[in-house]
Length: 163
Image 1 (cartoon, rainbow, N blue to C red):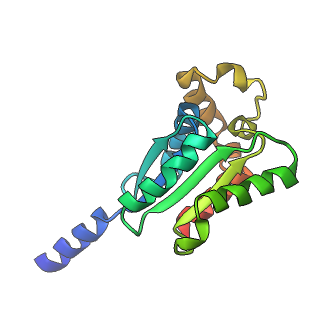
Image 2: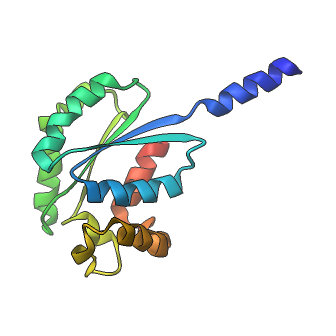
């Protein structure tokens, strides 16, 4: 009986590892709050690597992939800076090309964009003026969580994590 309890205890401590590679601190505050609400810390170890814009984000991908365990899910997330779906899709294709996407096992690395930016997930379209106010952003996530979790890009990222 003691052996079974030790095994179950050890199994509970194994957490799925998730690494977000993102453009900036605002993205970290918003996504951290969303996904830590969505995926309990008892089951998931969620970490963030913050770049300083799109090009910095791209340069971080390879070193991070090479430094984290193979079972880690890695999500590259950025703002497309466009409302044109074709241009947004082309930027996803370009991002995949720049990070050599096809050389990694399927399901390990995901590329996601918010079109035109992460603030699009909030019902309050004036949120952009609060971009540096992290307390305000956390409260906005909390008060809008039910609608945010159903946004297209958030749902796609959640499905990728759970796959």
